[in-house]
Length: 292
Image (tube, rainbow, N blue to C red):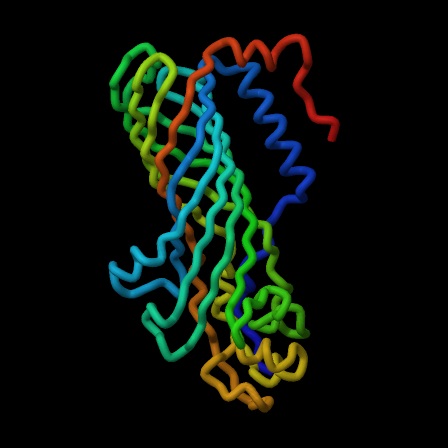
């Protein structure tokens, strides 16, 4: 066996779900206690993926875009600084048939659910009383996301992570990667203040990931015989579709590069400003706390 000798990438950085839930609840409560204006809104947009199976041409890139939806709450701490809690759902996919290495035969698709907290720095002062104003902003923050890469084989979708297509879990290979991971949203937006209550934002951002397995493809050095004998022929075929798949060949290979994967979210965001009323409703008389 010739497993990867490089320092293993941290593809399993993830907080316990109870800890993450508690942090988000505390942050949510803090918004309504400390902040001033409160916007609640929805997002309609699209997701796209960037990684080992990215398309080559701009036309294929457009075809790769998938719909995304979400909800958010935004609050302002000053005239220039806001914060936003978001929940988004979408999907991504990729295929070597549209990429730079069509002979490899890799392909995947995955739904994505994300929750994140971002800070917004408005480059111009923001007031809801100023109608029809446009405010550019930049944002960055931290979040978590859930993914589950799948690939089609023999006419059915198969979950890739349990198969260990790069030997994950076998002696001499990395541990299985986690399907719940941390991400770091960042990007730019433009906000249009329509009147005292309504605003519309156009936002485009990327998610810096701590994993290279969004597409289940990384740069681990894999021995085909290890996958075939320990995970079975289906796992072996998905590990290297260019090989026959009916015998445990003694072949080693790298499936992709070690660069981190990304995904992107572009969205139209429509929100309604509730002002002080909602803040007071959350503030009094019931205290906001987490029992965890």
